[in-house]
Length: 193
Image (cartoon, rainbow, N blue to C red):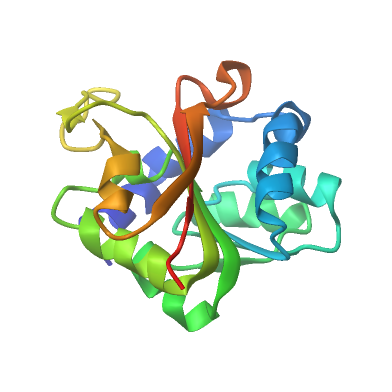
């Protein structure tokens, strides 16, 4: 297991889940727009935590096939308690789950170290049939941010540009709703055929 996964699997990750209880309804308007743009029938969230995003998606369309992955067992248990199908695994292992119409991260890639980021992004692209969505803290360059007294645990980055360099085409981008996603940007992208 990677150092990043060990960190989020620890009590730090469990405490994160406990203090970040978000009402899925606050994210429904954002997800309505994303689902209207993608027509996704299967969705995988990398770093699903307690399933807030997937619960919001299920509210919009209960027929969409949902899957969440995370490394923190307490978060996965909470998501499962809400009826979200979940698997304990790192992002680099998702190929074993098959292909999904839409794969997304929300506040996850910001925690992936620079040396691991290309492999994680490649795994996401490789498992997507059609679309990739990143909802992450943005910056024009990579900027490390001290995260709750921890160094090397959070970076703002130009995620849209990084995905474009891997061949994806941005079809929509902007600021995610601050009341639902803190101060994140979003990039909705098409995977080349």
